Image (tube, rainbow, N blue to C red; front, side, top):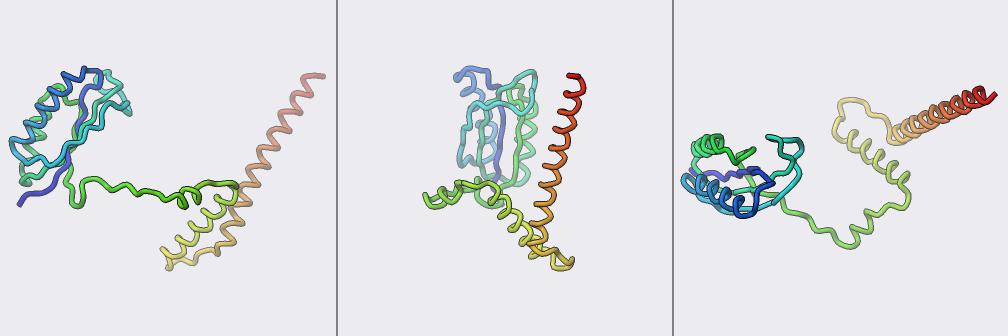
Length: 178
């Protein structure tokens, strides 16, 4: 029984388009030899999170394919011995290959704009506390008002500490001026 798989691989991002196309064709041939390719997504050149073989840029490609459960091991074995593939990852895709992107309506975009960030923080704290109460009914949870009050006290404490540090700095400057 064939399963759905997703192969993500990274090529050297500093190469020319001709060389990259040749290397992508080779990888696709490796996959086609043992599986049915459904789609190929080319993400393109992107900055790597860390250097790989002294390279900072990679060329990302995703291949969606159907194969027998033992075939991804053969694909991995062949990718491991190719010099031009920097990194690769094959995963089983149980649902759709990629999550669909939700389109926001104009009203939802307007709702996301924040005029008073303090109110948004308070609202987030309240919502978080409500979710915590719903999730864990075993432990007695604080009331939402107490959570908001505690968070406000913590913010005030941080403000007090920073004010004290500024006062101490001003005092030391006054002493050095005398």
